[in-house]
Image (cartoon, rainbow, N blue to C red; front, side):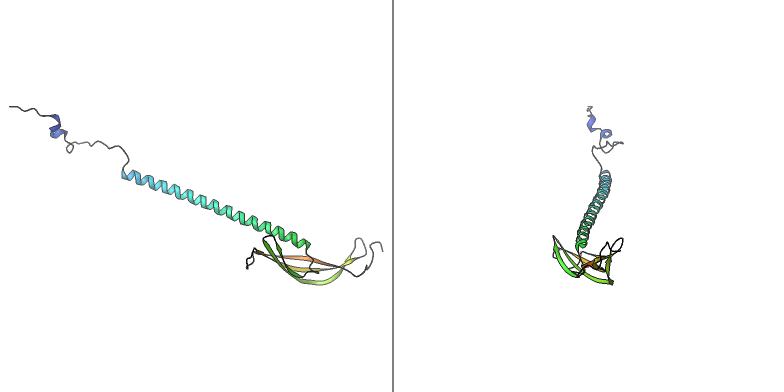
Length: 163
């Protein structure tokens, strides 16, 4: 007797003998690895860019903080008379200012414009202002300036109208 052969039992239809394999759905290992490498490269690039931006902002913040402190120091220096206070220390907000002066040249009597002699004695001073931040013991920055010291004479030495 003849027996009926089912099509599934045929060696032609077997999985191992099929000349073309059907492709499975999804990503292969190589594709996943390539995408991870690309993703990591983009991620590291973005991270480096972000870190540079943060560093630039921090440098600018520090620069503006120093400039603001220098402006404060220069405003104080405008009020300083080295003939009366040749050295000293002052707490100004979060800053501590320490200054010392050295005279330059000789003391001179003020001359008036257009003629005459004034009532002040003047002298140039080389001034060093050292700025400390808070309770720090090391200086934050140092400013070196030349200031004019002045002192009122005992009596008028001449008048502007004399000529």
